[in-house]
Length: 554
Image 1 (tube, rainbow, N blue to C red):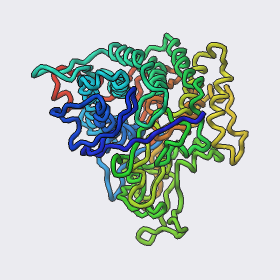
Image 2 (cartoon, rainbow, N blue to C red):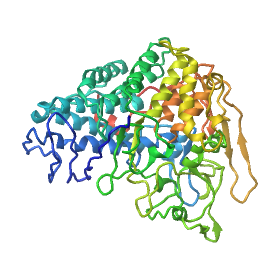
Image 3 (tube, one colour):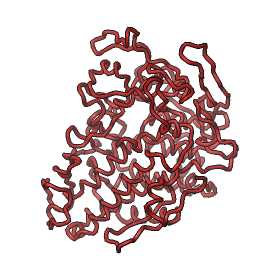
Image 4 (cartoon, rainbow, N blue to C red):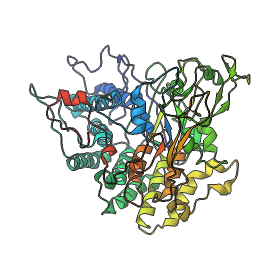
């Protein structure tokens, strides 16, 4: 059955327009000159029109400059190198090399936007008009749990605040990871049945909460560095089966259907963050990836920096018949949308397959394939108003497959069922070429990764002979390495990869995130050193709250 979506008018930054959400009463959109003014006495009918700060903070957290979506630059898929003649500074280089520190603006931006969302939820939960709506309260508690899930994933040792009114001088206390885990799970358990079963852009439905719980269970052992209890994978499957058995979702006919400017028609979206022209922009991938001259390929007229580039080691892993490659990347000589060649200072614009170095000497402007996964709309819009497929059905199937493989089967289902689920996800990407290649076997999924891990850097200047520094680590020692590869091909640039690399381990006990080298990032030599699994708490947060203690290793 096709999921039903409604796309709300999004609030502008100034809050002139407010989002409304469905509840037990018929609430209509209300226009105010200010967002949730403390002096305005809201009625029950317009209580839910106060939710704009809750949504805005999530949009900012995900796709503001220094957003959560950028954290793939810590992984083995893509990076933002120093662009010779342009420059990008140390921020992105530090993330690629895993040289994290508390002064990185990326971390403080994510911290501040997430806690702005928490504060917005707490503020509304303290309002009597909201308290009178059971559905509104449930939605806000679920959103607050989502914010804490994101903070927990990034920082682990975080302060918990559930109130809006505080005495003068009060500062929140850090809680232990177990206390935060228990809080998030308890909140989700208590509100899940109070939420709507309809799937509406920007709102957390019952199915979105089940998905969030499944994510918590899937990552539990990696987050707590305790792999002695496999029951969390069983619980993950139980949550996923609720989504599957509902019959509400199915894979979209085409992979690209999930990355259009408007994804409300995709039957695959379980939870989406809506972005809307004039009222809620944010996705700057077109600006980040496109060479300035390369904008002509799409008729895109907005600003462009040409910063991002795909790691050639990752590009090497694709099957030549996998349709996701062309859906995700462009490379080689470029032409405009009329088929005419594009030139830069008399030289044909040609995105090269290889990039030479993150910073020594860096990359020249044409190096690296560019991402086109998210729809690039002509004019100045680019990807700015592309919705975010935060949770989608393909992830449900892949997560269940992973848990079945880790358990060796569960509740009557086997490892072969896991292979069938992965095959199901792959089928739409090989139908136009060689359908037989969509089939994945248990042995392939449990076998090695095809990623040629190792340091791979060319330190030569453009006018010099290549000077490659390479090491060969391979992927033979990665447990479930074939599945890890499939996760990359399906979910690149969807905020998945950092979690996946931390969750998947090597035969020596290290996770792939720390234990493998790629491009210019080197493996951690001490297998017991896992401090990079989480980021340092931002220095600005430490300076503002004496109750906070920096994460170990920083």
